[in-house]
Amino acid sequence: MVRMADQDGQAEHAGFFLFLSNALVAIVTAPYRRTFKLYTWKPINQIRAAGGDRGILIPLVKDWKADKYAEIQSVQVAASICAGATLATIPWSQDHNPIWVADALWFSSLICSLWAVITSIQAKALLDDLPDRDQLNSTLSDAELQRMRRVILRPGISHYVMLWIWQFPSMTMSYAWCTFLAGLTVHICTPFIRNMPWDSKHNIAIVYLAVGSVGLITYGLSSVVVYAGEKDYERSASAFTGRRGTGGYGPSAAYAGSSGHAPLGFGRSDLEDAIDGVPFGRSLADYVREHAAAGSRREERSPLLG
Figure (cartoon, rainbow, N blue to C red):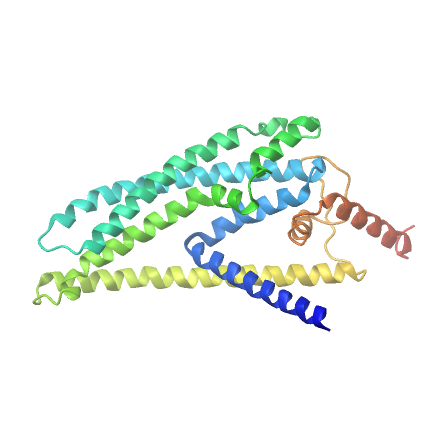
């Protein structure tokens, strides 16, 4: 009884810690949540779960490398624009009686922009160490396959450290824009903050807040729509997986991918859903073989076949 109580207590603490971790990740990545999930969190977990299975790993790396290159290019452009905008607005702080918070936010924006550009160059250098797209096929040697996996995951480094490194350029770019807009708002609203006598600056601040509120509300609504769409997709995928596990049939487009492997009885999106449900320590090779065997047994039992 005591042991069971201890186990229940440990499970409760683990669940609470997981909840806090997820909440912290959601808060920190809020400005760039979708980018973080699509280009870092999900693909890195998939690559780790795939283990050394070349039939799964090579298509995953090929797609992820192309997506990551596009992400890095966007980060460099956005961060450069933000740095230019910040440098252009910093002289405004030389006005009479400025608020130090605005300066602090603008200088934070500038350093975040610079780090976004610098770390994106480093991330591109890491991607350049991976095999070219034409080399990412079934003829890739085992040694090169393992080297490629080491470049992405760095087994000697914590999993979450590598997640942090790969997502850092997008994070700093997003926070650069957030701090820039926050500093701009504080600067323009200085007449209200300091309770200054009414003049044209108050009118400018009111117009700025009105226009800015429209953009902020639209951004918030679009974020809610995107989040709701993700949750609907996850529920749909879970329901489909449940039907598949009880012998039901869903869309069965074969997964051949870039590797040219034989059909496994489920589509590319289903494979990605399966990868998401596999613990980090387990390879997907066994899962794929088991699923393919189960699909073959269902076909043999189906009265619609031969």
